Image (cartoon, rainbow, N blue to C red):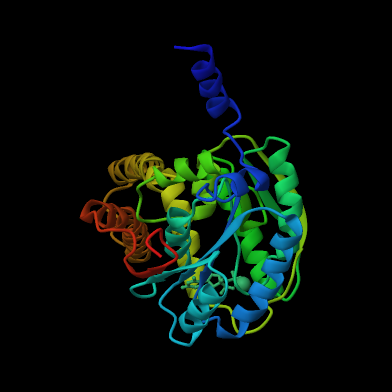
Length: 341
Ligand code: UDP
Ligand code: MG
């Protein structure tokens, strides 16, 4: 191997060649420095404002960029608006999914279609201020692979949502092996190598916060104030959030499955002691029939416990079923901005 080859090999391994804007002018086909990935579902009232702010920020940064928008089967004019923005500015690329697949999968589709050296997923409702991208890029240039944005405040969110979110982070923090940082969403900057690592995770239940944490790499964070939605309504309700939390816990911990063997053991020991007591008492005092109440309580208690444990096994089994079906994660109906255009 010549010295030049080995030198370039080392560069690509250790500091993963980061292209600058001037490089891209020299090589017009070179990959952009920054990819911003935006999942959108029925966000027609936010699209124009989003690009206004996002483009101002990236223009000021002076980097080469692409904005990969994923239309997650919107029922309103979101897709139409996105396409007209794509015609205005070809750096805006549009992935139109075949139907609504949910935010996590829309985000996955966006990451798969992004090419940039640094990738930033951002919400379309401007709750994550695009202005923070400057600070994220600065940290990335210092050499970090993942710079996540941690929320200082959750303005515009009810105390119940804040309270339940805190509870969720506490539970999952106890149960899972990987540490999922508190109060972070998907808003973060990832180096290309982290995105490539994420792409290697094939699971269908995509709890992105957990997957981001699982891939590791050199991580740091910045803090920001989460703004209220610019307009429109959140797509989440408490039932969806509950299921999202279940997905998170079940995908990242097998503790709920293992609890039952211990619980079963404890109940068996208690039952054995009680049974011994009953036998001895009957031997000493003779036959004693009453006991309807205690019998009912024991049957109902054990029945309840068994149903809960079955339900929990079901949660895991259902997810195993989803995985073995091996369906694609999402289907793309159209892509505006590919190399053919
Ligand atoms: N989103 C999506 N598919 C969905 C639901 C939401 O792509 O099925 C997008 C949505 O357009 C927004 C982002 O995910 O850009 C965050 O959604 P939302 O603001 O409703 O969530 P919240 O901020 O309340 O957590
Ligand atoms: Mg939002």
